[in-house]
Image (cartoon, rainbow, N blue to C red; front, side, top):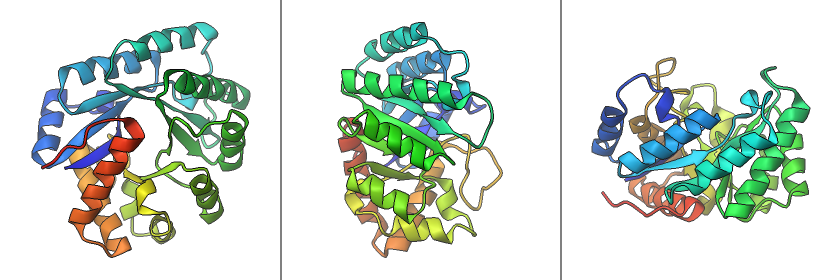
Length: 258
């Protein structure tokens, strides 16, 4: 079974039970549904409780941090503690591409997420869009690294990759790995040690080729895994085992055999 380490099941405009069933039938499990607000984090925990093979991450996306307060993080911690199927904190980070939240508010919220992840011993999912240096500096300043750090939908260059690997972070690749003009991303995916690799869909966003531009869903993570196997010149069955093992180690979820 191939894991989808990062999806937003609440944002897929189809029946969640059907989405999960289709994914499992396609050989995809486990799936981690990721919160981006307080409400979507609570939804993720509820979904994880209802569906086998679904786990939750709780967090506030950097683009949604303009109105967060200390009380927001008290509530987020309550949600995180409410279920054993919460396996990560995030997604959090910095986004300098969209001007939806002040940079200083994003940074404050990111620090709160890092501290919550360390306090609870949960993996930390990082969103980094055009903010590589500041993200790495903040993570270093907060001493992030244990519990595991996952660089969601990796978009950095070779220097950023090398620094993330030096720190032991996991590198997650999504649909852009398959895009025709993403040769550099594919080259970087071949440089990371196999024990640091994860794959994801970021559903309903970032559909891989040949579905680019359409709503994404977890079963399409197989296309990302197939591209990764081809780029690294290893059998798909081998990359499936690697990804299952890495996801289990990063998030503390069980390995699911097909």
